[in-house]
Length: 114
Image 1 (cartoon, rainbow, N blue to C red):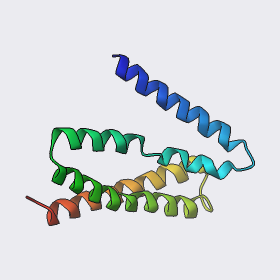
Image 2 (spheres, rainbow, N blue to C red):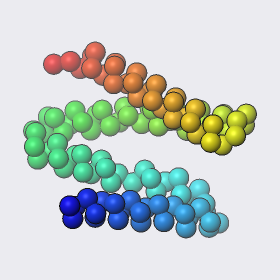
Image 3 (tube, rainbow, N blue to C red):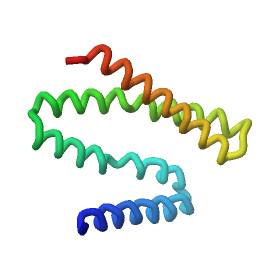
Image 4 (cartoon, one colour):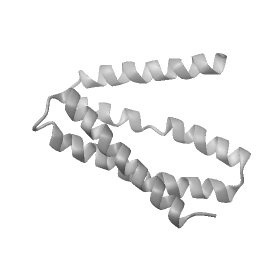
């Protein structure tokens, strides 16, 4: 239970930091904060301690490919905000991310089955 509260507190602090940064002259840095590898650190630690180094290496390589859905999200949002209201553009960009993530997982499992 304490671990869950700690993780929620970290999440709240990140949201506060993003809010503060978005009001500064360097507002664009707010887009970097969510990319801090908090969850990647947790995932890599768990895989590295519960599996073997080869599984960790596979997880790392998949993580490199996982940047593609995020780029799809950013590119689609960039274009959608020119023709849609922000909430709809965000929903559409998340849908694009979801499709790209599904494609990545499908291709990964097809070519790395075993």
